[in-house]
Image (cartoon, rainbow, N blue to C red; front, side, top):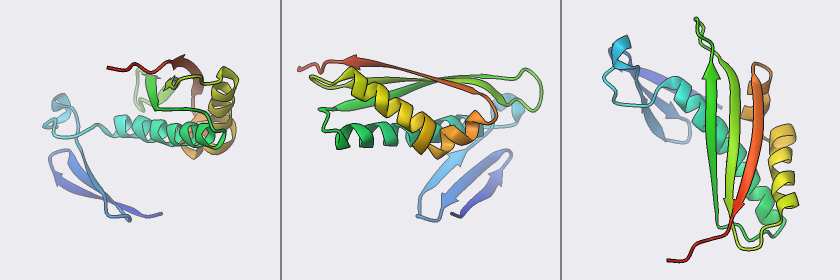
Length: 141
């Protein structure tokens, strides 16, 4: 895997992937940023959230669970001093589907956390990561 991060100006950058996608990253205004993109640490959490969500959805689909939506709500705590690393991360999945089996959802979350999600497993070496989930029935408008 190869990516490139190009400086725009100030503390603004464009990250480009080898697959041809780009994203703007920027620092907070108090650090010289212009607030034109996400903060790098936000991107790190989003990447982890997408990685584990990919696993959970894929595992539930393979188990033929009637999943119609999955949202990973992630809260993180950071150290007070530099380097302001993550010290705790909690991932709460809100999984929606009519007749979802709670044990299958729990199994999918556990498999992602312990076996499949490269990002989560890598970050677990540096901080505490916990997981939870809830199941919602779909609403029909």
